[in-house]
Amino acid sequence: MTTTPLTFAVLADRYGRAVAYLASLDRNPVPSDPTAADAATLVQLVIDAADFLIQDHSFEQAGLLTAAASHLANALKAGDDDRPGLLRQAEEKLGFIGDITPDLRAHADELGIAWAF
Image 1 (spheres, rainbow, N blue to C red):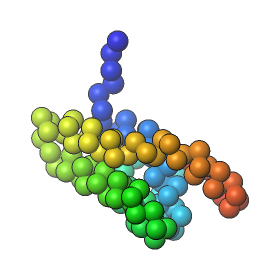
Image 2: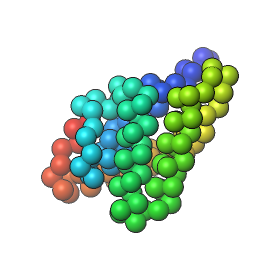
Image 3: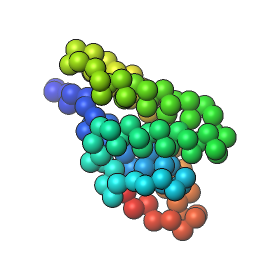
């Protein structure tokens, strides 16, 4: 069995829609296809999503996203040897997004917002 190496592109594909939705709730600009976000855009989306969660008083989840953004930002500057570990740490923090994505979709439906991503 082969495993796909963890990259910014893989993380954007896995978590881009959900973090873009959260970021958009705070009226932040988001790319039309957040699953194809480049590394710097992904970092900004995660920061913006964390900021929204702070305003929403979801402090634990905001803390996870803030930590993920920090790991992602460090991975941007890291060498090839350190980057995979930082990306893994970011994914560990982003993991809860998969659990809340159905709730985010339901929330979008309640607000009449198209889950456009």
